[in-house]
Length: 244
Image (cartoon, rainbow, N blue to C red; front, side, top):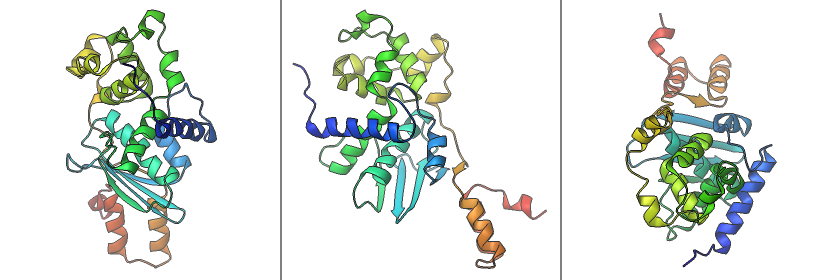
């Protein structure tokens, strides 16, 4: 039996496409998420957190902040970023949310919407289809592992996120998807792809003018030296090296 798309999902796919277009992206190309975050002026910190904590978003007026768990794979981090973008730019009256993206839990309406928005934003339908060159693979459960690897590498997404998207597009069913979840890194290596996407990373990185604002506050004597160093430490700066 074919899966039916509900009106909420159709609206979120439309909003994701509109979001791409508003920021100079078409529905076929991958997103350079760090560049987009910088363009949107989202203060973003990448830090190691507990396994159950994927990300967090805060919005106060025009100020937006995001925290991303670097203990998770790069592919999962990318999904988390897109999930948080829903909260920061699409959700009405948003202020704060700690998130575990990828659950697609309809019992939590805003998290459910954020997950689908992330899937549509990160892995657009036209982009997926553009990467499938063999028309036979458009039949359900005929898409090859090599093609799946090509798509997930192209969009820098996790295997889990891509399989959910392919199921949503009715290119695979749940059982076929389950058969493709094992030995992801090994399969990438066997087909000649690097495994960076499936590994943790980005620790200590930050996006935005957090450091610049901290320096301006210190130079204008609005914060103490110890407070300034504490802010830099949040960015992963080696304070001892500054004090040599």
